[in-house]
Image 1 (spheres, helix red, strand yellow):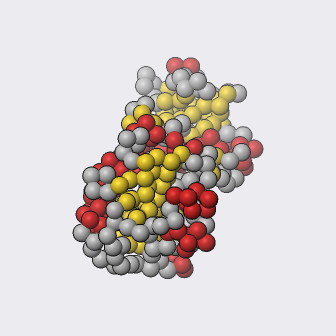
Image 2: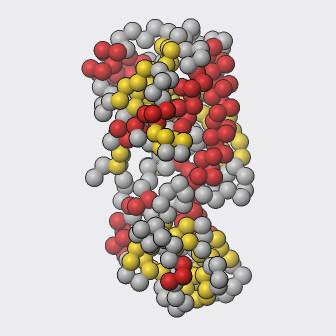
Image 3: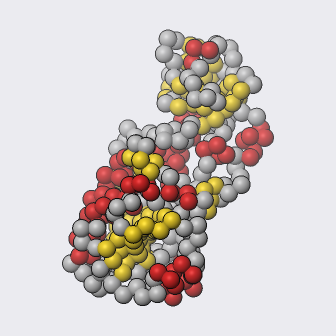
Length: 334
């Protein structure tokens, strides 16, 4: 398919990729940017928010709801206009897609499709040690999430030594920027895109995660799964949680070893050795190496840790951590 001559690009959502696309594409196109409350004050570069960075890149709209009233007022005629979604906080309604966007609305998705639809991408990948990386653009042609025909895709491998979400994000970002450049070149030249359908029977969906709600540590997990779980909620997130004595703490920058000894299940979570720079925790089929254990104020309390004490998570916290968390344009729903 071809999109025809494009004069305006409308960017919907948030994140660094939206900002970068706006910055690069404004040289050739008029730019509109539609942002919800959840993304408006998102820190993109240092302490600079998305709202401040896109201020002079195009016409900005800060709205709570992407409804028909807004679309009718601003986008009744979409001739020579292309719409791109980057982490949109809105699910586009089927009737509005057909009326205002049909075959002109594209979503940027950074995992394999039709597998791995939904959010929380890097954390889910780390949990499963998935090293296959993807950049993809697909049409939004219904209200089914991430289900439209793929118009462009690239595949790569994440380096084996990446373990934290921010490391995956940084590597993905490098690939996405090159991918965006290629897409812009093809749009400028009005090149043809070969559509790739997504077979529904291969699809999988995983929801967004919340570190505070879903990141409670289960000390019965085998050491590899435990390490992956804690890493999945590491930087840029607050860190996976558990309890030390009677206070909740967060673990970051952990490692593992399987060369020390085997532990009985009752020993899981016990701090059995402490050195100058780290302490060891007995786990299922190995030991967790901990250097950073943060209290509720974010202070590393490593010096206060005593050998023989236990890290533990109450059952009610583990049970509640399985509850699904929902988000809208304002952020996490209460």
